Image (tube, rainbow, N blue to C red; front, side, top):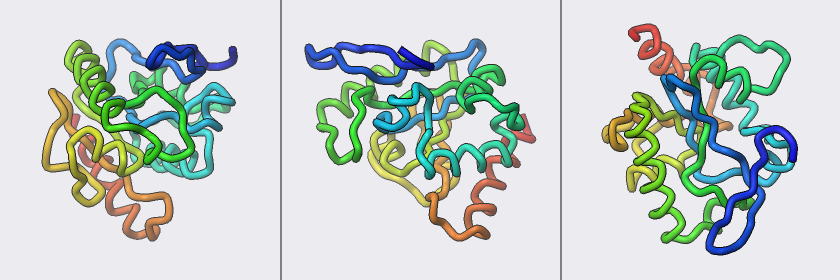
Length: 178
């Protein structure tokens, strides 16, 4: 096993996936709907091109520390930012996940967030927001909370630069006020 790979038993089947990364304290957690096969293969979160774009935006907004030459998830954990997924089963598309998996994953995640008192969830992609809240507002802070946590939805990877900058400035302003 490399990086943060782990084996979980899901529906009675051993599945290679990514371990949850929970720093203590945890000031924010980046939540995906489920891990991408490429990320599991490498052993680190957000290894695809769209994921790397999102991590660059999170660095610029001040959630993640400046790049230090390592993997972004390792650097983030050192800065009290965690990583997890609603469902731990890797798939190429979130549409391959069942409603039962999403429901079970949300219950697991809600318990973890409440236990750890994590104030902020950052969702890189819209399906994670829909899984958590049942719907998604436009990118930015969402109207609802998930348990004890505020939810921030990032702009899509192909959002125009000006739109993405405006949305990410909302997160930047929030972080500056903490």
